[in-house]
Length: 291
Image 1 (cartoon, one colour):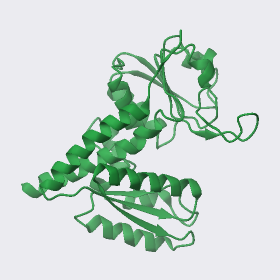
Image 2 (cartoon, one colour):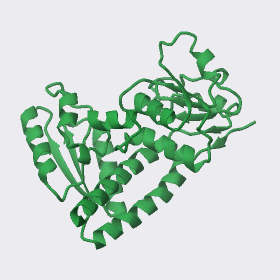
Image 3 (cartoon, rainbow, N blue to C red):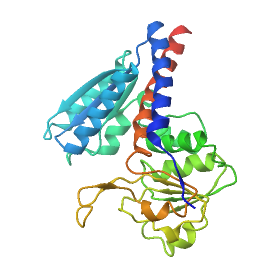
Image 4 (spheres, helix red, strand yellow):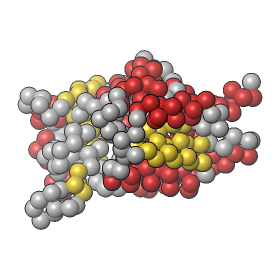
């Protein structure tokens, strides 16, 4: 058996088309969706991520504002910019690209973003609302995974789901979304004892551990849905320089029923859900204005 490949590029293109249509309707009503992106320092990966987000906004009809600060900027200067963006009614989403230099308290920066403009879904209030199953901005990567499962018609309710990874950005919110959808969820990490005993039970296996090809074929239940969130650049061997996920894709696809590739799987959906959250924030602002 060879797994069906869940192509994130195809789904992303379709969803972004829907987002662009919604953005156009809002713009025609006088509300232009707008995302402000804050980048501190010159980390090459962060610069690429920001450039891709800005480009995606432009294609979707979302206005983007970009604020670049040098690595040694005083934290107070960035916090002042966030405060100004919070008060700007024309800005609907604020994103601070992580990681930040050491002079910053990342948690404090994320908490400084107004909850209704926290389109990354990292503010503690949004995290709490998500845990209670209330309306909230959902972190973009796990949100994208749920959209992929939905689009593929994967039955989540009643399924055994295992998440490898416990980060605030992916692992924890991913587990919460699966719980809210009715799955029975086990959260593991790289240090979990007898990890394979857990993963072999999974109808849905989400790998977000940050280790290249960490999940081997013999750790996967035959026919399982395998979602690979990891993105790693190999540093040695014949594949040095290439990107790969947290799953040993070549072997895993011979066991799984459905699997996401890296690149081209979850990655495109992350930015797509950022766009979706920004347009949703603009729609809420438009509704509040009309009341």
